[in-house]
Image (cartoon, rainbow, N blue to C red; front, side, top):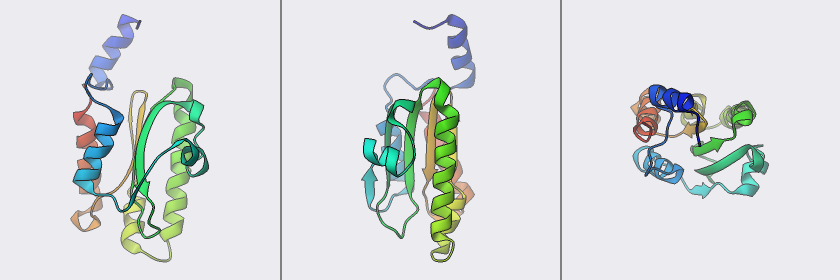
Length: 154
């Protein structure tokens, strides 16, 4: 199925999702460890309407984001088709900007959290994380998210 050289690349970079892991597993653990307020599930409609991501750019996705207008929480995972990684990244960057702008005048903790939004790229996988307790230090929470994501890859 796969070119052996590609497989070598996967092994070296740790961009291969573990056989028993799913995007849902990763998002659920992120949610448990970092918390998410009033989670709404990502579906095809909000994928396009809220995030500006065309469903045919991704092979697979799972995500939750806060339905509360007082929360910036987002935990999204995508398996992206190779030629659309930049499209999805750009859409996520635009979403981050929209969230940040939304909290600019109001909730400083959420603004801080949104400013620390992280896009983690692992091969064909992209993760968009805005979560955690800003009081713990936003950068610590970002590192925690990266560690959780890394633990699902080999």
